[in-house]
Length: 438
Image 1 (cartoon, rainbow, N blue to C red):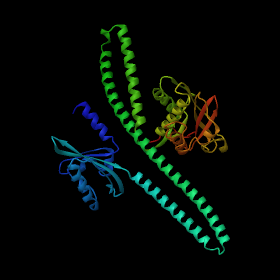
Image 2 (spheres, rainbow, N blue to C red; image 1 turned 90 degrees about the vertical axis):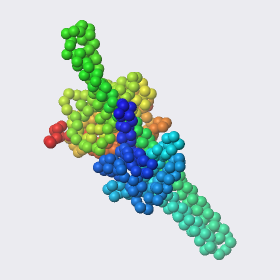
Image 3 (cartoon, rainbow, N blue to C red; image 1 turned 180 degrees about the horizontal axis):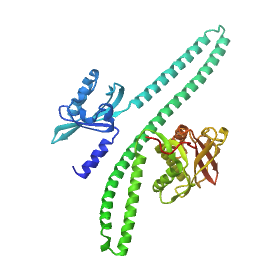
Image 4 (tube, helix red, strand yellow; image 1 turned 120 degrees about the horizontal axis):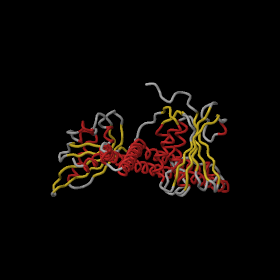
């Protein structure tokens, strides 16, 4: 297999979808993609050799067979249908069936399945809200008609109908406003889901490239190590250049490994973490992502500052705060990061929640030299989907809020127009050892 084929296969296997190749008779002969885990928990190879139609429930097989028949005529077919996973859980799947033709003859089929259960559930919930609001509108109209019939005189009927009409119009305006809010919520949810899919695809691509780059760096290091064994044949200038090359290659290797660890998708797991060491290592990694016109300065005391948190979630929170600081400075300036400890503050002096009760607090503050923010923005800073940036998702600082809440910590914000913003993440100091027993 060529290097290009291997990279292509790596990207396919990292896809969140389930990709299948069927022969002309509809029998599976190749399966790849993370989405196949729901159908084949023991590995996608257990699906190879089975008829694709047989994977669907009995009531859906006629529809699936008709989709294959239509695709065999050269037509791409799309449909959405429920299907149980290997664990017996019902999920909704969006399926695309495309024919592959060679010399005007059907050669095989490509089938891509995507789990869209959350999208279907959201649509169902919105339809239920619409039905409920329509029922309330009908009830309001019925009450207005009933009210008009209770008055015998023309004047009374006129006054009653006038009041009922105003009441109905008021209720109708309120219901329309609720409908508009529901539609906006749906649009925001769909946009957030699309952005998450794009970020997932970019993360998979970066992870694959970093993995290949790391392998190439190992080849460079091995070659340079061979030269180090023969330094007697080199001039002093060549030995100095060789040392520079080895330092650079080892630094690049550490950077790619850090990038792979940062991009890896894994469940949260809290553990004892030295906050000073984590932030220092993070700063080395983040400098490459901020751009050449943004500097990062770190100030930390000697000695360990242990906290109880998830390492990767904390790094993601730090990256979100630093990216907001970079944007506030217009991609030019210095970000100052300070790590320290202090006596615990009273609960009412924290912006989020009290990190622990009494004792010592450990903090990391991120300060920028941007234009600061007004009070109305500060009050909504951690709201999901709230953003002041064009094209922003509004989820970055909401993730910071969630991470600090799970760590039992808090967030403090200091901002003044024309001076800049300082965001301080505060944790209760972890009293135990940094290394847990096996």
